[in-house]
Structures are given as C-alpha cells and as structure tokens.
Length: 402
Ligand SMILES: Nc1ncnc2c1ncn2[C@@H]1O[C@H](COP(=O)(O)OP(=O)(O)OP(=O)(O)O)[C@@H](O)[C@H]1O
Ligand SMILES: [Mg+2]
Image (cartoon, rainbow, N blue to C red):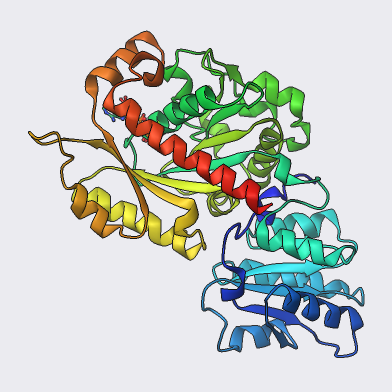
C-alpha cells in the first residue's frame, strides 16, 4: 500500500490543539486506550472520551471544525473497523478518523482511505504515529515522507484563468533557482484536456492507460517513462487525450501516482482541473500548499472566495494557501486595477498579482518555450518569481518543522 501519503499529510500545519479530539473507549479497562489518551495529552490535546461513535456525534464540541476521532481496537473486535469506516464515510466533512490496530485487511484499509477522511495507524510506536497523523511527517509503511516533494496544488477558480500557465512558469522558475540535484515536476491532472505539453511543444507521454487499472505498476521506472524532460529542467506530466478512460480514475490511483512521483522530486506542482472529482479534497489536504488562481473581475473574485471558503473548511489555513489574480490590467499610472480593493477582500491572505501580457504569452506560444525563458525580465516574469519565492519559503518552513 503506497497511497497513504496524502491522509498522513492531513492537517499539515493545522494548529492541532484547537481541533476537537475524541477517543472511543467502550471498555474502560483497556490499558492501551489510557495510554492513547495520555499520549494525546502529551501532545497538547485534551481528548474527549466517548463510549461510541454515536456519542461523538452528539457531543457539543463535535462539528466545530474538523475533529480527530481516534478509534482504538485493542481487543481485535472485527466489527469496529467497519464502524470506523462507515463513520468516516458519513462524517467526512466533520471528522478525520484514526483507526488503531495492529493488522487490517487490505480491503478495509482501501475503504478507509477512500473516504478521504481516515487513516490506519498501529500500536507500535504509537506516539510517533500520532504525530505523523497530526503533522503529516510521513507514513509508517512507506518510510519517511520528509524525503519527499513539496507538493503545490494550483486550484483554478474557474476555467481559462491561466492555471496551467502559472503552474508551468512557476515550475520553470523553481528549477532555475534550485541546486543541481533538485528536481521539479509539473503534473497536469486535467486528464481529458491536458494542455501542458502543448505549451512547451512536447508530445505528451503521460498515458494513464499504462496504470489506471493497475496502480501497483507505478514505480520509479514507469514514472520516468511517462514524463517529458524539458530543457528548463522541469519534468512535464501531460496526458494524450483519453476521453473514455479518465472518467474511471479512482482516488487510489491518483494517490499511488502522487506518492511515486513525490519520491523523485523536490517540487511537484499540480495543475488541477476546474471541475470537482472524488479525489480532489484529499489531494488538496495532502499538498504542502494550495494556490487558488483566478481573475480580478467581480464574478471571478466571488469564485475565488468560494474556493477559499472550501480550503478553510478543509483546515488549509492562510499559512499554506495563497491566491493569484492573473491577467491583471494596469491603469495609466502602471498600477494594477482594483488591487487594494482585492487585497481588502482577502485581508490576512497571501495575494499575488500577475499582469496580463499578451506579447510575452504570444511569443512563448509561438516558440514553444515558457515565458520565464523568452521574457524573464518582463513584469509577468517578476510576478511569477514572487510566487516561486513564496513556495520556496513554504518548503523551508516544512523542512524546519520536520
Ligand atoms: N497573464 C497572462 N497574460 C496574458 N495571457 C495569459 C496570461 N495567463 C494566461 N494567459 C493565456 O490565457 C489562456 C488560458 O491560459 P491557461 O491554459 O493557462 O488557462 P487554464 O486555466 O489552464 O485553462 P483551462 O481551464 O482550459 O485548463 C492561454 O492562451 C494563455 O496563454
Ligand atoms: Mg489548464
């Protein structure tokens, strides 16, 4: 099982002590359950002990933000796994379920992970396992995720706002500033209409038919085969059109893919589609940071605010979320239209502005090269560099934290 990276990264930077925590303790004599409560207390978490999952639902603190619900199974009660999974399915908006047992069937584990609201940890090394769940420090079975990539999700507020352009250009910037051994990938998750490879004049090689039914095939070698190397040192993952197949993309396939790719790269930038998928929230939560992209018009600002609200609901706070207003027009003084009004609307949030520059875009399109190569000194180039620097600061932050 390799697709647990994302659930483990859940709440990467959430202030853990501010989130309600519950421990299900049906049997008061279970000594391991007491140990769990004590260890949570040691991590600054006061656990509410409940006798059943139903009791959690009725608790006055439940529903105030996303709760952690620990379901320890010391006695080997098989029905408890099923109850935990069903709770995670039903309550994915309100809770993240942490099921604790030494062994779990592959089927049950898959069901739990598919809820996007649950993870399994073992009694062995319990304290570290709990810390991993809270801080996203890494998986138990897959080794340390601290070695893996900084994943940045570019989330468009709607179609056509420049999401692909921004992900690509930021990737090119990051590749240009890193040390030699750093690697950058841009992955287009618009499986039906991937345009990334076109922007840099490459034949797309990321054929999802290679692994869609067999995610276990995804290994370092296949990842290498599916990527396009670009002269900017950015590896591109962009699909040839596969209309029928992409409908069947399952969450665990995406997780297996991200897990494998993140082992190889320093940065993975995800170009997300503007339509929702069952795997979406988990990908957002698993990312080191999310960048919402949109335009400066009134309807577009509203759409950005909606996405932002959704990120808040997923506990993705302002320290790992940013907004990019793309295609900004300037007035006769060279100032960006409505800049202060937009900044006021998103007060307390990191907002970047990227200018509209049709000449730079056209030249890049006609030469099949990114703007960071063709027009690095343009204002658009400067704007992209700011986004890249912010991403670099996120990486530094997460390295310090680990
Ligand atoms: N700052 C900008 N100035 C001028 N043109 C831009 C700018 N950013 C993007 N564009 C152009 O806007 C068009 C849409 O950009 P892009 O494909 O990156 O958007 P998208 O959000 O990925 O779209 P889709 O929803 O189709 O995936 C492209 O032609 C691109 O060259
Ligand atoms: Mg796009």
